[in-house]
Image (cartoon, rainbow, N blue to C red; front, side, top):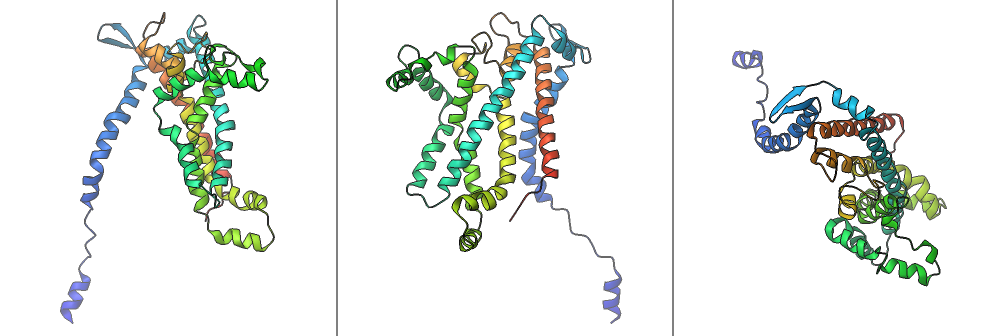
Length: 315
């Protein structure tokens, strides 16, 4: 009795710290910090310096950002043009890619014959090499031997057979549509995974109440899809605002014609590494990267602000 009271009066020892968690997380944290976090902060640091001589830097505060925003000769017009084109590139993908992906996911989430084959075919371009995709589209849209123009002429639409990649008015839209085609499968699969996770009991109860397929989509599926639609929209914003690969592969670093397809990433590339008649300036390029970081961060914060105030439905 006394021994049991003595044991109960002793303070209970807390659980030992799970050191195995550190062992498992340490490699990933070190690699991520070394190749992601450190370059990010070092790039932001670089934007506050200028190179005086080879290997010697001088702190100038926000002077690089002031020059970027006020240099009316080159930097400011190119920055505003790239910023406008980046938002347009994102808008095209947002208004074309995501609605089509949602409709395809809704159609393939039902019992469709050959649904697996359709999903594979739609997702295949997303894993296709960009060099191959760019080469194929360059051939298809070639004014000399492009099959797209032959098809338009055969359909009586010869007036629209224009060198779309060579005109300032159509180059960026064409590149955005190519990007939307290639990565259509990614949002489609995200929507598809969300739709097939919805219990069938909800649909069966709706059918018993006399609801049609269209009413089920609008009243049940779409509200439950809203969290995923928000995530896909955010990913679309981040991915397309940083659009570089398809533009660089088809139009080069100068993003022609006459910078009509120039985005923030191609502008950053030319400023940081130099291209054509533009001299490389890593410090000014870092200022461009810092500007992009602020714009993307603002978009993410806006998404989080809206998400906290919109009622979402979860199962």
